[in-house]
Length: 169
Image (cartoon, rainbow, N blue to C red; front, side):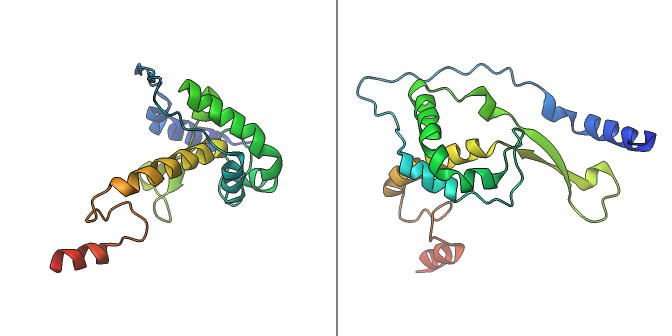
């Protein structure tokens, strides 16, 4: 049973990080598609591969489904999640349960003496992280061919050393 000091500490902590709990009331206009637009469709093999890449040591999201469940059950979950992901993409709607987050305070330095010595980390559901990775991989595969050859940031196999070398030569 937590002591009064523990309860006070948790209440102060909750108040300090409460700005994470404010609801986002921004209205977002739903995307509209023209008939000739290609809607991204995901393949179950890609979903399965992404699920197998889940790091089981990472923290579970607010749904409390640990990473090893996704990794070890990738074969069984791939088809179900592919259907969910493709429905989400075709309707341009992300399921509400994918949007849930939990803010967890992590110490910036040890020992953490004040609340300012902590940084909040938002935990999101692992199935949303997989969805984001699949969408990002698709976008990047199309985008990389259109980037300027002197674009070095956020590109695989392009480092700051490459950028400096290109600038000097």
